[in-house]
Length: 200
Image 1 (cartoon, rainbow, N blue to C red):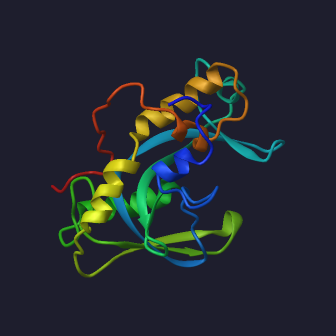
Image 2: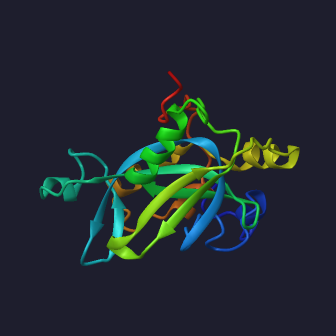
């Protein structure tokens, strides 16, 4: 699909409710979600002058790395937001990743790729004083047929999305948005990368 697609086509195809409907926004307090994909990691730089983050394209091509700035690790994963039932792209940092990894490795809640239960991401504080904690639901809850179909139809390969964002930056596009990357078809099928550790 080209970037000149009919307005509204992507929103309809991927069941995006609004401009920000495809992003998970973590509110203060509990945020119940269902993790429905593995996660993919990427480096990110925060530009203090522009007041926004840019994906790191690697030491060879990244202007921030070449200035000696260290990238911070970020992760993307697809989730179902239990507030509205919509599949959204979640971006989170290392602390949330480590909490989910603990669940994946635990005896009681362990899983290989995705859990069979919902999780609560509890957000406390604001800005640099923000803390996150993760709590697993006590019971497994199978996904509905409708949810399974939405996952199959909506969840694009995360590694492809991240690579396209990097390619745009290297190609000279200054303002890269995930919404733009979501509009294009995957270049190739990729093997799913399991970042979350399996049970031992």
